Length: 188
Length: 398
Image (cartoon, rainbow over all chains, first blue to last red; front, side, top):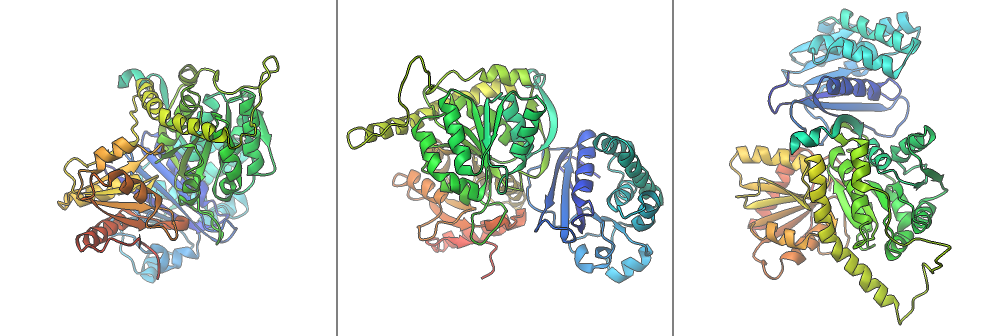
């Protein structure tokens, strides 16, 4: 997706407590590990559980100058299943964008409901995946897996290593499983 | 030079806050004092972990307020220690009284400031109101655009502050959240390179029981003015010292710093002026405007105090129009602080240069490249219609 001078912009949308900030950092650090220039930052409102949280990552082969929020993401990841059905979340998405969302619904049904045209629209059933793996809701790593599958911007192994170094032991292993299932099960 | 410089450093990705903490660790400070609660940043949390883990042999003094944090580093600096503190927003405001003590006592303290808005209303996001509030406090003031500059300036700050010709405190400011909480990649020097560059602190006032002297004395009508005159001179001396330190740092890092950062100014008729992270966003905007044939450039102010008078005169006198973007508000003034600094530098020798002042981004309101393009078009039009006599506000609902 990158070329000389081109900056790729990623936007994450979710709610406080769903791991938006962490997923955003993981993709940013994975891109860094693979030699890219990166800029990865959250857009905090009031920091409270349940409130909307956005995260942004830019990457490029060249140093990145711009410091504003991301308004027209090349890649959009929606972690919260209710936001996945909210047309307002998709403002700024372009026909060339790749979108991955957490939902139990079919991609075609969501696209129809939201009314957008994009390059790729992928759905990860993170509710199901995380229930089976964690016994509770952990949405960010399954969606991250789906994002990697659809975009190919980093190697899955790079993320697996990052997750294991950050969360050694059981927590890391379960998240790696969730990441892989998201990668394998994303549907377009 | 670059290849040699690269062998002395490593590629790293950290938040702006952690980049500062990393530099402070490498500077091998002796004493850190901070108020660890809001509006503090992760800088001191990371530093306290370095100290706890034994990676940094320093005393970490957690205090009950920013006023005490500054007072504690003043005491430690008087005892000969290399010191550090960090703050933001109301914390800096609360420190105000002690800021003047630090510079008046000629102490080489270094402080990091994640620049943020001031209350009321309560806000935690970025603007430069806190930074400009300390304008006349006698501190040397730098503003980093992103993690790389902020890291480099933090290291250089110690070299400048501790130079016997200077002995003044230095603040390194960087944009709250936009830089402080953003992870980005940069080059950090290896520990031994920084250690060799800075050495140990050997200069400045030092309490020595074997050689008793008084510090912080009462100086009334007959001597206060002389102290202040010397303090003014120290700030003047710092101009040359800053130049020398920038040069030495370029030798070890390959990164060349200047008080002003110019971009596409060579044949520019209009120049946009900004500070902090907006400078990068403005470069992006200028790239777009240049593609459309607009003769526009951007100058970022890296060194705010001492104001780089000569460099400003040289750089700005050749433009037709100057559009100043300020993330602060000076109610009742003719314009914001940077506008006034530039105008007073150009007047009366270059009074043909026309200027306009834009207030933007208060309380963290985002500025995009398109926003800067808008400011350029609006500002240029107002100047050409001679309607540039008032401060303009961009991006506000009114």
